[in-house]
Amino acid sequence: MIITIGREFGSGGREFGRRLAEELGIAYYDREILAEIAKKTAYSQEYIEEVSQGRPVALFPIHYGGSFLSVADPNITQAADIFQEQSNVLKELADKSDCLIIGRAADYVLRDRHPFRIFIYSSLEAKVRRCKEREDEREKGLSDKALIKRIKQVDKKRRQYYEFYTGNVWGDRNHYDLLINTSNGDLKALAKAVAALLKPKK
Amino acid sequence: MIITIGREFGSGGREFGRRLAEELGIAYYDREILAEIAKKTAYSQEYIEEVSQGRPVALFPIHYGGSFLSVADPNITQAADIFQEQSNVLKELADKSDCLIIGRAADYVLRDRHPFRIFIYSSLEAKVRRCKEREDEREKGLSDKALIKRIKQVDKKRRQYYEFYTGNVWGDRNHYDLLINTSNGDLKALAKAVAALLKPKK
Image (cartoon, rainbow over all chains, first blue to last red):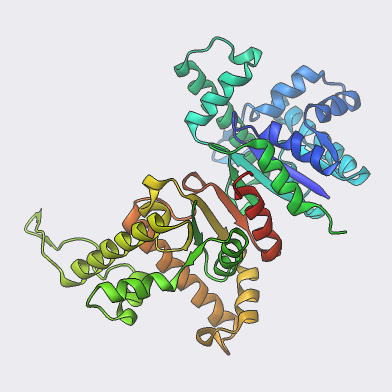
């Protein structure tokens, strides 16, 4: 059993995922994956995190003299290397045991293994509320306006990252098995319900 | 508790809805609503069904001499009357008891009552498969190609109907609480899981 979770920033996707993995008794991966990659590659974890959260700096080879000249932009090359390496790690982990993976375009990377693909989202108001409640270092003391800006920025980066590597539309229902709006939902109850659905029948 | 279900044609939305209503022990409405409307209005049920499945014939008043002339097109007037009457019936039913309503833009019509809004969909292949299995009179003996055409036609009508009356995008996740892809899902298990989620805590 492989479960992948895409999620909007502040929608509680990570907490939902952790609870669901616990309910099912399967491995849970988010930042651990990055740590694993960091061990395998020469890049530092901090740098990997930065790159894997955002789209590579330039999207296309430089357009030159009416034809596309494939210039090996070091930024692209490095980002693509990281994505490739990360994809290999994801596949290794998925082959090792049942698991749940947060983000990292895992639904796409592992598509041959037919994961159960969940997307977690909520209204902007609910995301602001959740960000305030959890008091992460990076959002501490931000005004509502600044928080909304940050939420939109992070979601934009996630969308760009996902769409750049997969060619699919982030959050488009046709690429997921289940989309859950957590605006008014209790994450614990939601995780229990989904676990009941996915638990292998005895 | 009010549950509304939007669904793509052939995705099993009606069966899912019936099972969910049974699990929860609440009223279930689909064609019954139409019967109720028919009793209340002078229109025959057959005609109402036809109109409520499709967009009114003309969408806008006739454009005339550079300005919009509000011509009372009898087709529009009648369709709008039916939608209004149907909306009143939906509200009456929702106030009478807990219920689940299939289609009819009920999520929008009852928005002030905060229904739990579900959207059921699947891949085209799964919809073709399901249509063949259920052997409805209207799809009997159709070739795959004809069936695909019919599925697309019905979904187009539903989309137009929904978007004409609500101004929202049909199946856009932001207007639903839960979107379920039934391509590989067991409707019975899905209904049980959602029922467990929605059942009032004792």
